[in-house]
Image (cartoon, rainbow, N blue to C red; front, top):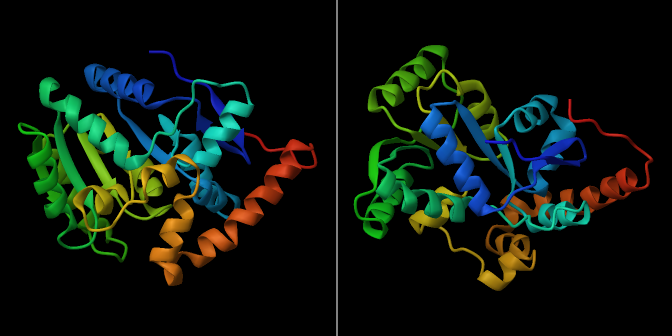
Length: 256
């Protein structure tokens, strides 16, 4: 299947796709057993790339880096890709799990705080009877030792999943996916972050109208001001400033 084009947003290549295209590409990877990972990116993810080159390389080396935030959808459309729609982590998880019942895909849940992966498994099995969740674990917050990481890879491979869902914070989950693609036998790693909390019911999602209008950040800020104020009140204005500089040609960004 042809690789979709990418839109250069401050040196980060955002895949010009919609949800249906993403699903078709994931199906193709699984059919060919071709190892790839998917990052779902927001303005926060793009801004993390401005201060961490390893994160930028991870997002640009992915099989797909989807427009998870509405600003990235709007920018993609301004570049002429009118078909682009938001590929939101929770929506992607639900859509993949729904179609996986008929296709027989096997899933492994890796991430979330203690108890979240178990709650997510219960929710998915209730919503999609027949979905195959073949393993789950919540890794510790602190970095794993090389031995612990090797053991985690062995556990995941022993479960023989087709898809490994990674629920960590950005950019930790993107770096993990980039480091483990090819080490895991699963052809697809999907780094979907907060989807673990939202789909499991541990956190409330913004109303649909807020998600579609680009105001989800405000809903989340009101819910978790101490944790998220820096991300939204500092990163968002800085993103707009840097984007203006890119649009005016004051700074060049490459996708190397």
